[in-house]
Image 1 (tube, rainbow, N blue to C red):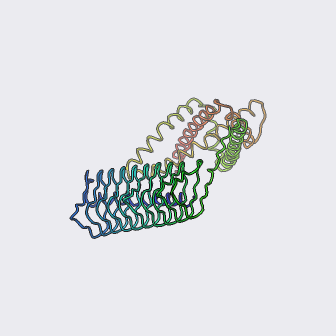
Image 2: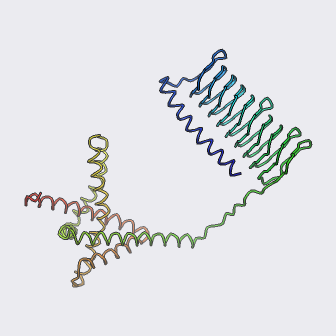
Length: 392
């Protein structure tokens, strides 16, 4: 059964790739897609043929492979090669000397096929006027096979009717399987179905007939406690990872940029509302400026730099707010301590607040806006001081 599904998936992948190429080729060679394409009866094409159109009719002869995509496809001529077709309605009443691979809403094969047939369709009808020289691999909602198949058949459908000779075994995944009195299977019949096959009087299976029950699907009601436990564990893990990341980066900032870090915290203390306003303005304007730079080809490198800086500022803004909270707690209690401990305590308080339902998201938003604004103001002040001192 797995081979059936793998064959169908492989077929679909190959077919979609081919028809994408065919569409590109049609536009490249013709410049337009006509509403109707016809190869008349007196025309012979001496190479592979590609066509995409709402309506395609092949009445002539193609001495090569045919790659067709359209709304309605009719093959009533001869294809001396493979046929690959995708359409709403695909009718093959002519001759295909090699393989047929077809995708369609409705597929009708009523002519001889020299080798294999692979089909995926809403409705598949292989009429009694047809013959398949090789194997049949097909999937559809409703399938009728009234003509002979030279080798094996691997099928998947809601309903399958077999009414002629299958040269080898049949493997099927099916809702309802029907073998008419004229059906002959020269091999084993293996089918997976919830219902017994209707093997009518006169039908013959020369090998073994094996029915397999479909796998049972146990749908259990989700355990609310398990789901809540999983969510809580996930949130705790994320909070722990964030805490460690913020702590490490914050300690690095305190070690390598102590003056800049303290200046940012002081701005939060002395110019809190200005920080909030600048943070909100930055969040609104920065994406617009970056998008405009991306729209200008020569501005793309600058846009990438600004985007990286913007995301960096958003991420580390929380660190300065946490350090501010920690220093505020220690200064209020009259305790003097290292700034690393202030950062540690501030991060713990921040992480606890963010875990509160609903309010947590508001805390995160405010922390980012306050921290981002203070960071932008501190960067501007540092730049101006450096210019004044002729450092840069």
